[in-house]
Length: 254
Ligand code: PEP
Image (cartoon, rainbow, N blue to C red; front, side, top):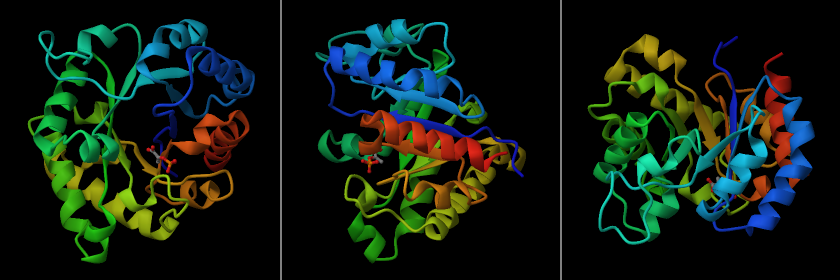
């Protein structure tokens, strides 16, 4: 059995007002706190981070941002710098496919963000994954290994990174990958990390699966040897489903 602690993170995307976010956290918190075999993280929209971080202070439920700019300050209207997140959150999602697709973020920009996040002590949750077209053209291996190599280029502290394998065609579609297929690609990601940072480091890096994870399908994912948790979108917006996914992660590691 692996010694990697499972990590389940909820990506709330552009959903929830501050009041709705607080209500969601309040509904989940007592049950989440009991599941400390799993690293649990919620990633609300920026405007809610302060209120939710305050509500979770003193608990071991982590808070993450959904994005971050790599520059430390300056004329980047609407953006948030790494130091602004320092002390507020412990995690930041980087390179989500929606950022890559709608905001034209490329691998080099993702790499700068990874370095910047680690530089201020945040855990980057780095998203990689192929599109449907790439999948159908059998390019998954090349795309995903290329994204991992680029994201980790010149990164000194690879063990401080979490990777989320999220096939783009599985995000928000209700069409999850197969657990076997996801494990295979995640194994490939682990081997790729090994070539970049050494096998020992690669063996300790947590790699999540993401893409239409639900309480109904997650047991089969977390039973896979290389899958260390989930990045959850839609199902993280309902207290019962997010808590159940965390519970399944905890149950799989006893
Ligand atoms: C995500 O936003 O990272 C995600 C995986 O979304 P969903 O679970 O809704 O597919």
